[in-house]
Image (cartoon, rainbow, N blue to C red; front, top):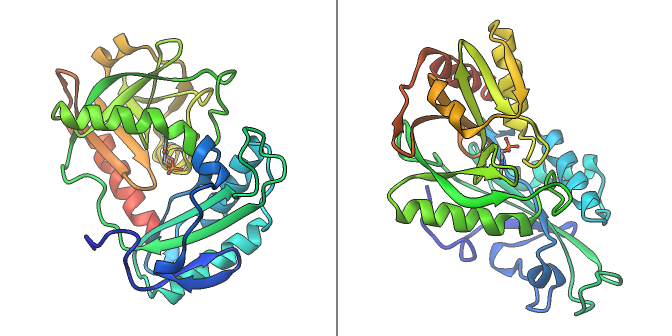
Length: 286
Ligand SMILES: Cc1ncc(COP(=O)(O)O)c(C=O)c1O
């Protein structure tokens, strides 16, 4: 994995329809999205030279922008083709893709009327998200907002303000990540991944009212059902963590990630987690 700064590498980035040298993929300081948080982005992984669930990621980018009241100047098919091109040009067999859309530097006011929409796609090597086989989570003081307070289903840059705060507070406290509650006090998700609990032999995962409906979440739910494991989406309250016998996270970056501790409570890396981790690892490379 490269430790070079992200803005100082060799390679090319797809930038508004062109491949540009990596170091030239820049925006102006008066870019609207930089001031008002309305960029949207994606994260996809490359396995064996192919982007897993590429079209789902391209479609979600378009949908995220729509939820922020703008249209991308490229179709899902064009975004798919651009992503394949940038992965191939950078000769990546494995790694990560980061598509980003933002509103440009045409106006300074809060209104985005008059801004142009820009899109870039970068792809680069990126290994495991966590170093630990089983991670420790701490409950965050930051809460996922209600759907009336934020477009929660959008992968919008502004929503990550609380994720970064929660994650850095967790790291400072000696944990690997934060578990966030939502505005009602229900369990929601980690700062970049969805949550699953095994309770009574069934998988329970929070409903998507104010979390990101992860593409990995949906994939793992289907894998579990294929194994005959019942999956239940419902409201889950923090006291139910006492009844969970296994806990894991899912996400493009984290894949299927066992959780070994939440606050002071420990969990084993049990058979269901291990099975789904193996099933996911096999599927993404198939
Ligand atoms: C806040 C949040 N929740 C969940 C996820 C998992 O989503 P996916 O599986 O589509 O990567 C992510 C990652 O994109 C995320 O940032």
